[in-house]
Image (cartoon, rainbow, N blue to C red; front, side, top):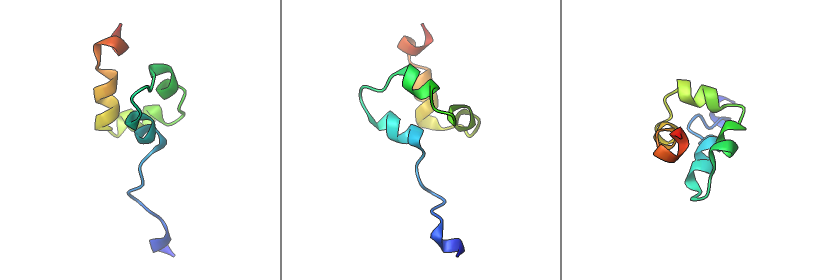
Length: 55
């Protein structure tokens, strides 16, 4: 049973970050955005550090 679970599945946030037109609002609306920040999701942190997100 243990092997049924994919422990390396990508989060919905990762899927959103693959899109070129993702917005800060879309990411902030995700309920696991804080957890992904705590887990140091590199893609998410790089997106949040973009100057257009910081303004």
